[in-house]
Image (cartoon, rainbow, N blue to C red; front, side):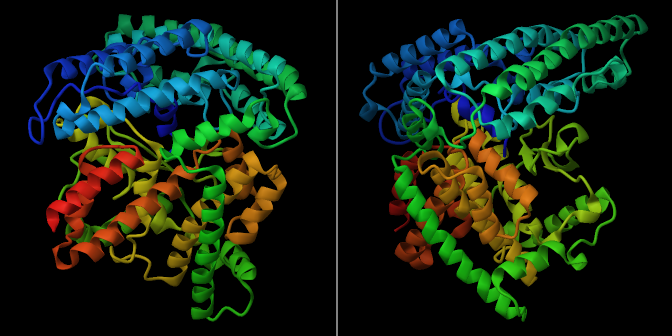
Length: 592
């Protein structure tokens, strides 16, 4: 779920405790509530894109120059001020809900503050995590940025002007990175400048950013339509196109020759410390990279044994690698002709599991849900993903599926497990239920911790058989392939960034252990190169949720209720794993 990344790397933007639960031990502390309310409001102004994605339209005209020295100084002061303010409260005198809020807030503030010393601004974007790509989604008129009123349209024009400043600062930071030796790998840079050039047009009507003009609301007057058409055409040609061309030219002509041939952070000055920090940030644990690496090796071996049993079950005569090749290339596994057939197949998965979903979940979201094909402009570099809906339900949660060629869309890629993860009951249930829960403080309604959010989604993949899926051995193989994929990440992510594993060695390791082609493995490995440690959160989080479920099933016996367990996992919003485990253990004791 890539959309989450902006929130994760701006951890702390969603931090408030406006509404306090008066139940539990201790009393509601109104001063604590006020502090957190102020923090939330100040955070929205500091990180206005987060407000937009949360459906709060107040700051839709703002785009922070988040790589500037001034902005970084402001965020440091922001985190420090509220961390100091927390010291004025005795945690033990707060009620249970406020204690959770205190713990999460303290963790987010400290982690965010600690991250500022590593100069991540010198790597302002890459081929996957990039404001220039997010800006295209927002400006297309099909994303989170609303285009319903005249004010909405004028808001976006202001963001366009701010984007030109952002782009210049990004180039300046890339140059600082060159001077200090903190640069991206060449393998990533060659993917980045074509993305920038794809936004360069001579006719504004052919621009992605012309979408809102092509789809004016019917109630706009002719005069407003003319003014906005002229303004958008001018902005596209005079601001947007020059900014993207400037970034593309810089990346190709100046930055690429200075980019590094190495793959991992350990090649950078201070890179080892950077990676250890990112492991902590993304897993919300104190696990060492080596501990995670060893867990990955054990999981790869375990899952490989399960794969072998399915290979034997279907009577395949070759080895596992040959079985992967067969699944990747046999025409029987590529039955689709059109993108609509692919999307319909995902909807069929949804319908088949619905009866069992009702047994496993007592609470379901009200937020609408849609399955869409990924937009053409970003499909080539995109993975399937979930974009959250708005808290008011006006914008649906969207499961995006990139379909470059429907005839090559392979059903053994794990369609069932993918839907469980990205859509239902994975990201759509967890994020929507949390956002809809107005009894939670806002930072827990809208905040996200990678290990919890992705851990929940990966845990949901393990529910396939209980939901009536994975009855076809090849779909089960696809699900195991997805699980193997997450286990491999623990190995290659750590090895790339701490053990000098090269991009090519990592691609080979991935292809040797799962049914993935070279193009797919390359995109994945380059993702881990560009967003270090982010891919670790999935498996670490899922293993923690499964560990707790197994423990409580054993301890509680007949008193264990799976639907209530799922409710408890989800009801308090995203939490760091240590806070999450303590909360769940407390609940389990009340069930005995």
